[in-house]
Structures are given as C-alpha cells and as structure tokens.
Image (cartoon, rainbow, N blue to C red; front, side, top):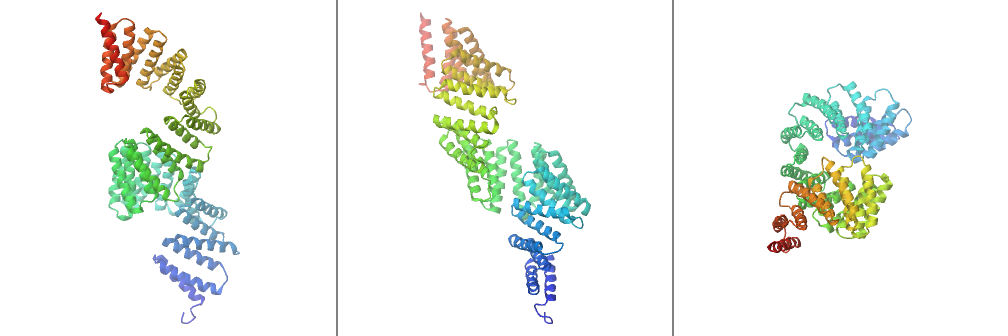
Length: 614
C-alpha cells in the first residue's frame, strides 16, 4: 500500500489472500472485511468480470459458513447472474452457485426453491464430464434430501444411491460422508416401511461412526437413535427401549450442544411407553421432552407443538379426556403462532378435540371444534374432498345427538354426495353415511325412506371384501329396529334372525351383541304370539348376558322380566315369581326405587303373590 497505493490491484490480491487465511481460521468477520475491501478495489479497475464474480462467490461462502445465510444468498445470486452474463465456459461456476443457493434454501426450509436450484446445477453437471465429482456428489445429496421431504422416495433413493457411488469412488468406504448418506437412505427406507433395510443401512453407518468416534460417542448414540426408530416401527419395543436408554446415558453427558437430542430421546421413550400402555411413564417422559424444548426453543416452536400433540394422545388413551383436550388446545395455540405450521394438523387436532367432547356428551363443544376443522379443510383441501365429507359425517352425527334432525340430514346427505363423486357409489364410506342418514330419517318417522337408505347401505357393506361380519350384523339389526318401530314385526324379525346367524358365524362377534339380538328376537316372537320360541330366545339371551356382563347387569334383569311374563302366561307362577324377584333385586341395585322398571317388577310380583293366595 505504501509503495503502490491503497487502490492498486496487487493490494486487492493481497487483501483477498489475507481474507482467505482468516476464513480458514474461522475468523469470519475479518475474512469478510478483507475480501470486501479487495472486491471494491477490483471494481475500480474493471467492469464486471469473472474475478469479480469469483470474489462475490468467495464472500458468499464465508458468510454462509458464518451462519449469515440471507446475506450469503444475495451474493450467490449476484455471482450467478454475473456468471451467466459473461462469455466463456463458466457453466461449472454457475453450477457451484446453484448448489450453494440450493443448500441455503434447504437450510431455511424452502424445499421447493432448493429443488429448483439443485436441478439447475444437476442439469449443468450432467453436460460436463471432468473434475465435477465433488460438486455432483453434493448436488445428488441435495436432490435426495429435497425429494425425501416431498415424499418422492424413488427419486430420492436414486439420487442418494448416485451420491453414495461417487463418495465410495472418491473418498473411500469408511468416510463420515459415506456414513451420512447411509443414514439418509436408512431414513428413507423407514418412511417406506422397509424397516429391515433401514436398520441395515443405519448399522453400516454406525460401524463407520464407531471407527471414527468410538462406541460410546454422541455420534454413535445419534445413529442408534435412528435404529431405535426403525425398531419402533417394527413393534420391537424392548430392543427399541434398550437402545434409547443407552443413547440417553451417552447424550446426557455430551453437554448443552446435545440438549435437543436429549429431548428427542425422552420423546421417543414416551412413544414406546405409550405403545406398551405404560401411560403414566409415557406422560412423564413426554413432559420432560416438552420442558426441555420449551426452555430451548420457547413456547411457540413447531417441535413444542408436536410434543404437545403426542402428549395429548397419551392422555387420551389414558382415559383423561379433560387433560387431553387442554393439551390439544395448547398445541393448536402454538401451531397458530407459527407461520409455517401445517393447517391440516390444526384441523386434525380440532377433530380429536371434537371427538373427545362427543365421548363426554358435551355436544355443543364438540360441534364447535368440528366446525373449526371443517372450515380449515374446506379452505385448504377444497369443499368437495373426501376429508371434508368425513368431517361432515362427524358433524351429522353430533347434530343427530343434539336432535337437530334437519341439520343432521343435510350433513349426511352432503357427505354421501361427496363420497360418491370421489370414490364411486359402492365405497364403504358411502355405506356408512347412508346408514346414518337412514337412521336419522327413522327418528322423524319417515320409515320408508329410512329403510330404503339403510338397505342400500347394507348392500354396499355385503359387497365390501374387508367388512367385518359383525358390522353387517349391526346393520341388519338397525334395519330390524326401524321396521319394528314402523310396526312391521314380521319383516323386522327376518332381519334380526339374519343378524343372529351372521353374529353366530363370526369368530369376533361381541357376546353381548349376540345376546341382545336373541333378546330382541324373543320380544318380537312374544309380540307375534309365539311364546314357546320367545321363551327359548330369552333363555339363550340370559345365558349370553350372564356370561358377557355378569349376573347383575340390567340386560340380565330384562331377560328375567320377559321370562317371568311368559312363565306367568303359561300358568307357571312359581317360576315367574322367581324370575321377577331376581329381576327386582338387580334393578334395585342399579336404579332408583321410583324408576319405572323397578315399579313394573314390583307390580308383577304383587299380582303373582295375590294370585297364589287363592
């Protein structure tokens, strides 16, 4: 500078070299300062040329390493624009820019723009054949990652495989870069449900990690975590838990840099405990993960929201609906504060809350949550989509519970229309909504329409290969009940008898359902005057109810009540009285003394005792 002056090109070259030295020592601020001064001098002497583009690229690289991604992106894009405008063979320089731009977009979570940049770089690399292996490796890795997040797994695997081939050729089998690619492929296989293949690749990665860092290292613990997640998917919970607990011991001693890994392990342990139905332990583990993540990320972060969701699911299965609803509400609040949140996750959570309120018979609150979900689904998925139809079906069910018949009809009718337009006329979802719609019609005494709809629903059910026999039997009893209310006893009996045959032929039918069906057949036979058959049915129902529900259930009391009436009609007063006494004993334990069923049993006993006195 003293000899040639501050603006001489040799000074520019010297400043640039000094900057490079600072960059290698991770002295980013000094490196950027030196290289920026060098660039300013260069611009005084020359119009935009390759050296200026190279300088922009180098400064952008330093800023990127420094973590100042936004500033780096601006300079990479300026360099790219300049490379494109210059004459000569600068395609590889353009590809380098595109690869770095893709990397920054990827780090910022902008997968679409990252993919575009990587594809542009890939197109250039495919046309070149010399000295591009390192660049092409990075491009393939970037494309693999982008396609992975977009769930285009075949494309993702194709690029990871090409990346791995280049890595093996250029840097050998035992490199940590190869280990990283093995793990990428392992994650991909896990997402595809190919868990054995996933474990194979993660294990290859683990062997490399252990050679570089040792068996008890935090790096090996992180890899074991990936193996544990695949084992979890395979439902090998004991092996999974063993790996997770071993990983936790290692990661807990690794310092604050691994605090999120500690939270991740506690989260995974909680999920395993949930599957093992150890709900209290699962809740404790997820609370620990939640506490760590709130401390590290603050209350309003996506990982906090996802942890709250899993915590809510544990509470839901643990039969603590009030607390589950509270936690789900917190999750929604967090999601709503995060711009990049998935709206559909919020809608799904509203549905879960709505279903919990429905179970608690708090139908107004359930309706409020389901309407919220419907609005989100309609806006983001379209008003004619299957997910909207499913939500309308659930809304119809709630309106039915609230005795808002017309609104229930409207929801079920719209659901049927949407299901048919998307899935065809014979899908099981069409059947389910038709059945509910028909049942609602029966509540308003529109029996002919009700039977028509429910019979069509049954036809679809019978043609559905995966439908369980007991579900078909349930539909048969539903139609039988509608016909009974319509005072068509003989037709009703036919449906109940077919239902009973289906129940008895099924290996998985609920014993109470079978007994209830036998009881109803008994009532119908009694109403039609066939007392002998009716008594036989009630006897079978009684044995079934005793076996399924115990001797003191109200169903047992009902069977005894009808048997008592029949024995009385046969003139067998002692048997009748015995049935009514046992019936009364059960009803008194379960019902208030002034309940109509208690009073009915007492009245029969009094009448029988008077008869027996004379």
